[in-house]
Length: 274
Image (cartoon, rainbow, N blue to C red):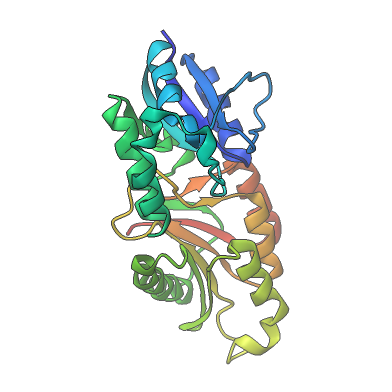
């Protein structure tokens, strides 16, 4: 019995999750969307297209798959109408309607379709809890000023969440220096780095905090925000005091490397209680 299907997108998360599952002795199969290859050493992934989603789901069921986990990033594929089979044709209107309503709606529809095939859709935390840490300070020290900035940033992220803008914000001395939008975390931290000398009202005041969290009401099985060593390096370049995130709601890619990078740069890493 195969057990679990890892629907792998791109980036480091599918590789890390596959490694964790292998170490735990879990039986799984890897699947990737055609045109979006994953990077998992030794994997021979099944390939599928949205236009033939129903036969793909039938195939997973025939392989003994009972649960599914999604990991990694995907761009929205172009759909070729000529490739759609009759059974998938009944699903396409639902997917196209969801495409028009943002990522959250699309992900909920995808989950619903998989569940209609009697798959249990689980999250990264269910497969590998160590990737989603609970509350605590992992590196450095958090000052009172940092805590105030993190609280303010959490309020901002919660406010923009329902608008599906982004999952992060940078706050220093109580002021919002930047919010995450479509260009992503790297672009936001790059903006802060490029304008650091002009953004903070008091050069001797708090350096600022980058905060990350899921959207309010987000399905925690899908599209959790991620942080990795590169994020720590970019936060250091932006002159920030540290990174905070919602405990239990953010995936850490290579926690040990993140801690080492933070300690080298003098930043704190804080999984903050919601």
